[in-house]
Structures are given as C-alpha cells and as structure tokens.
Length: 133
Image 1 (cartoon, rainbow, N blue to C red):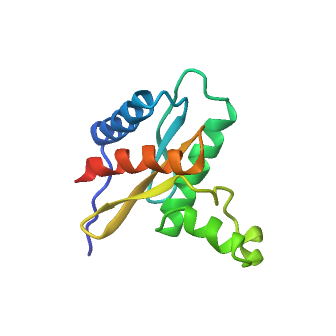
Image 2: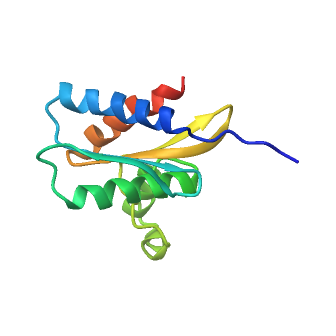
C-alpha cells in the first residue's frame, strides 16, 4: 500500500493568502482557485473587481494543471506551436496561470489564477505554490 500527502484546509488557506497578497501588492484583480490532485475544488477567492468568469477560468486552469501534472501553459504552448489536436482534449484550462502543487516529487493539487495578463496570472500562482516550500 502507498500513502500520499493531501492538501489540508489550513494549507489551502495559506496558499490562497500568499497568492492574494501578491495580487494585492500589484493591484491585480484576480480569482485564485486551489484544487486537489483529482482537480476537485478545495478553495476559491475572487478579489474585488475581477470579472465573474475569472472563477471558472481559474478553476479550470488549476484542474488542467492538476490532472496533467504540469503547468497549464505547456498545453497553451503546444497548441500555439501547431499541436492543434490538444484543442479537442478534455481540458478547458489550457491557458497560462495553472501551477501544480508538488510535495516530495508528487503532485498533490494545483493553483490556478485568472484576471490579468497570462504571465501575471502565473506570477500570482507561483507565489501561492511556494507555500509548499
């Protein structure tokens, strides 16, 4: 039998808090979503001024990153590079801003951010992901 680490409520809150602080510091209105390794939502925060669709997009970026075990940007890059077959993949968050949460080499979830430019979304998500150490 194998054991695995899981995200606790307390850790999810700290991840979202760190990401929120980065967004607030930069005056970015974003939505931050955290999912488990199966892509199931564990936490979501939409900052004032972020469009309602940000909640959906952030969650899908996180889900894509968790299920794919990689940054969501990789899928965007593949599609932009001509690998159009990924347009029919059962993932709807194939945009930059989803970062896997990795503990001891294993993906235990992901964070997704939406609301500003793609590299800014990813910046906020990376700060949240760094809470794992």
